[in-house]
Image (cartoon, rainbow, N blue to C red; front, side, top):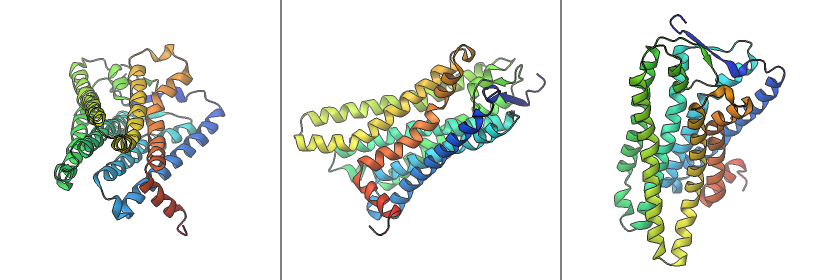
Length: 305
């Protein structure tokens, strides 16, 4: 394949008229994701009593969901209505960059949320001295900038590779799948990819688990009322963490097996889970479990109340 200029999404081929049903479902899901997450962000932005670290991090999580799904849905919906499903190497790398920046930011934000809960529960008197506005801004900035830098380097290296194939058995661009089509040595790409995986997923997940284990230890020696209050604030974060981790594991597993040996429906389901389920479930979890957010959302939807 000369220059590897274009790739083709093979899973969009031969869908027939069912593609219109998929388009309707995808469009509905995308609208729901935008609506739910925008409501969360507006509720936190407009309500001054919600201008606290935990709620600000929740709004960052919603913003990240909107950012990540914007890298997938518009392109996928266009492909469903199109007769051609090609994408340039540069556009493919850009889409992969947006989607996996979203995934990396999700874990780092969940790590900061776990640390916030650990500080609030284990050191309540020193909490405001630990989680200061400056600390929050710097932490969010660093944790978002780091994956952007690494993924930019990884994407730039991918654009320099000479390709021997142009068929992607995905419904979106996956940098690992692109690299596998190269005729050249991809050792550097694989090393950077592993570094990204370890530093933006494995390490944050380890720190998250450490924080919650410490929270459990602190709660064991506390009153039942303290335990109930602590667990109530942690449960939404734990649900979100488990949901996203299962989705990421599905995608990582899928990228390490021979896609053609799997049923197409399973291939699509596993590859899309982390892009669809967390962005639509996260705002529902927080809206249903945190009364302050729920009340403000109700006021936004029905101002008369």
